[in-house]
Amino acid sequence: MSSEAALIDAAKRGSTTAFADLVRAYREGLLRFLLTRTLSYADAEDALQDTLINAYRYLHSYDSRWRFSTWLYRIAINNAAKLRQATTVELSDLSSDESDPLEQCIAASERENLWVTARRLLNDDVYTAMWLRYIEDMSVKDISAVLERSVSWTKVNLLRARRILNAELNRESDTNKSKAYG
Amino acid sequence: MDKLAERLRHDAEQIDVTISTELDGRIRASLHGVKPESQTPIRSMSRSSTFWWASSLTGVAIAFALVVVLNLKSPESTPVASNAATIPLVLPTVKWNVRTAVLTSSLEQEFDDLAADLKKAEQVLKEDIDAVF
Image 1 (tube, rainbow over the protein chains, first blue to last red):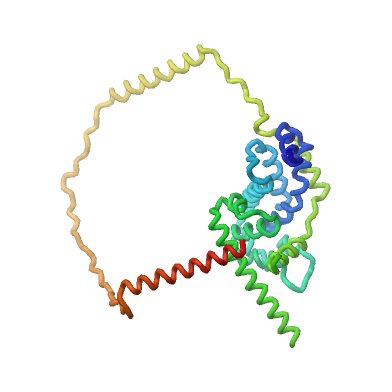
Image 2 (tube, each protein chain N blue to C red):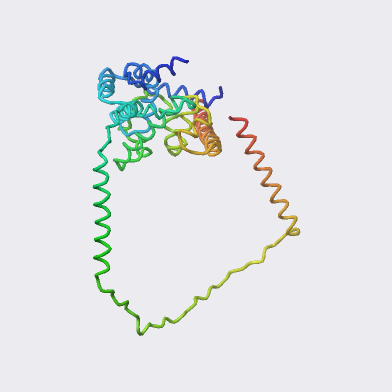
C-alpha cells in the first residue's frame, strides 16, 4: 500500500493528523489555483479551508481509482464557484483592476503573466483545464472527470486554448523584436 | 517540454503564495471540529411495534375521513360555454425569397466534394490533437 493510500485509510478512520499529512503536499498548489479563481486572497484562503474540510468530511466517498488530487480539485472548483456566486463581479473584470489578488501576488515584470492573459482570453472551464494539464500534470481523462465534461470536449478545448495562448506568445515576441530593432 | 508549457509552468511559479501559520491553525482547528460522514453514528431508530401500528391506523382513519368529507360535498355543475366566440382564421402570407442554387457540377459531385473536404478537415484536426496529447 502506498503512503498516500495508508494516509487516506487512517484519515477515513478519523485521524486528523493523517489527513493533515495527506493534504500538506497539495495545499500550496490548491491555494495558487484558487487565487486565480476567486476575487480576493481572503476568499482563496476561505475556499482552501472549505475544500479541505469538505474533503475530510466526505473522504469515505473518495474513489481510489482516481488520483487524490483529481478529487480534491473537483471540491476546490465547487467551493470557488460558490464563493463567486455571492458577488456580481466577474473574474475577467479584475484583469485591469489593481485589486486583482492574482496581480498582487505576482512579482513586477515587464511582460504580463501568461495566467493573467489566459484568464482574460479563456472561459472558466478551459482555463481550469489548462491549469490542471500544465501545472498539475493531469491526464485528459482526469481533467474531464474534474470538469464533468467529455474526453473529446477536453481534448478539443485544450488544443484551442493552446492555439490562443501560442498566438499571444508570438504576438509578444513580435512586439519585443520590434522594440529591440527600434 | 514545448515553449508554451515551459512558460505556463514558469508563470505559475511566479504566483507567490504561502500557507500562513494563521491559516494552518484555522484549518487544523476546523478539522478537529469535523467528523467524517461515515463515522457519524447512526441514531438508533428502533421503535416499539405499537408505535408503528398506532401511526398506520391514524393514517388510515384520516384517509377515510377525507373520502367521506369529499363525498358529502354536492357535485358542482360544470359550466358550459353557450355562445362560443368564433375566431376568424387569418393565415399570414409569407413571401419566400427563393434563389436557385448555381451548381458548377452535378449535385452528386458537389456532395462528394463536400464530404471529401469534411473528411480532410477532420483528419487534420485529429492529427493536431494526437500530436499535442
